[in-house]
Image (cartoon, rainbow, N blue to C red; front, top):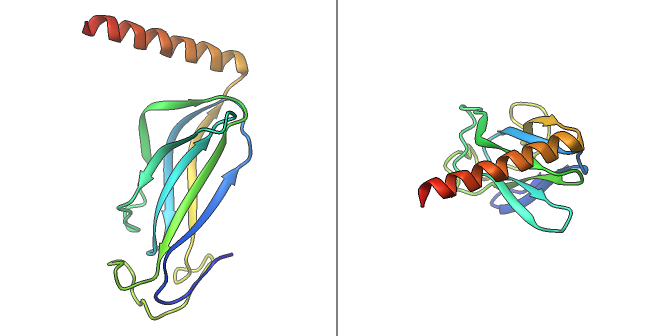
Length: 146
């Protein structure tokens, strides 16, 4: 678990959800304390990385769920990667004491970072059907805009 020394900014930590089955990613909910920004990215089987959520103005008191306008369709084998950046400096307006060492844990005074996700697993057939429907809807939308 990370240890965040006083006066240190830019400490990066990550959590990965192993290769998932075909999935609809419906929402993201970061859970943090005072020290960071976060992002949720998909690492596709071809190696591409796609930022799905970038939360750089996180407020601990909000604890919001961020629903996606349109759920992300992720094929089997995609890895979800939750990344947090810790800032234990005086530049962080949410930091109660930049001179304090911050440890990782479950207590209110401890630092933490979790990436809750609202996902629906699909069979490969369901994934292909949804992907095809989405592709057709995008084509129809493009034609109507012309």
